[in-house]
Image (cartoon, rainbow, N blue to C red; front, top):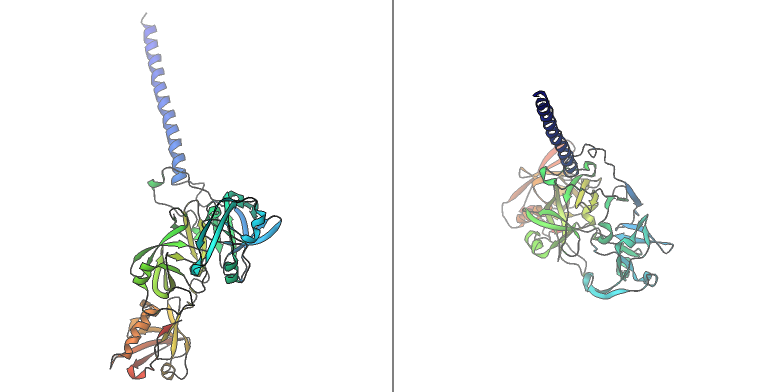
Length: 431
């Protein structure tokens, strides 16, 4: 009589205990799997680490004689050159293609281009036009503008502009060394717990990652930088900014704070330009950069061409990697007041770019390509070119003031001193 209840109790007890263990085990397994899935999307995934190979959707060769990045667009069975412009919100077709675009939508908009030139934008439904296999119809709406001014400035017919409304969907890699442009499929990070660990560089082969912030309303890409005395600047990255030997623009209020007393000569109609002693983007530092005064701060092709540049627009990142021209001599050179030679920077060295054989420097033994190592025992690498001009200009004013150059030529080092009596008065300047 007692065995049956006993058996029920023991067997039943084991059964319910076993069911509880099983439920907990199943729940724990499911929870572990779920958390692992979430973390793999946001923080770490063994499969993505080192094995993620992005798919190249399209590849183009950029003409070597073009300042802008031109890519071929196939439209209405013909091929046209369009500029790739991260500084344009909208994709644009030239007015010469207007009659093939169908019925206009929206009201035309008027505005002013560079130097106050008026222009008009008309809007049309995006047509079936192809950048390789990629369809510009994804833009939904395109603008139509007379691009004659652009074509005249570039001495090349521009039939359109590829703007951010199209580019923002892709990874766009610009290899200035090999003159290629890649459109790559973006693998978006879909994890919802990315804050549990530091952001990882998913593509170290692309260089240093920088965060992109999109400008309010217009959606143009901004990256953070610092100018001179650690002044923060939000730079718009503009592949349509093409002024030879110029790194970009600085907003007027920043330009006035940091520009040197010595300004560059500019063409009629251009704003003021000056050499900036240094600025930085991420961990990269740049010396003797040239910026124009403008309404906005931007980095243009003069800056970008030094790098391998990869825009991962969907993940709001830009990668920079040093290219072959990163350490090339700056095109900016300064005339050292009255001493008869000009200086230019190469990497961390300042060297004699040219010298007047009838000038004081030549007579004292300085020669072209000599490296200036020190001024008065102070390492010259701590100076910007503009600082040198401003410092040496004091020789005109101070009686008895003497400055000593330490000059290196191969394995030979020599010291050359100049005083006020050695100076041939002239206007200091930067070219």
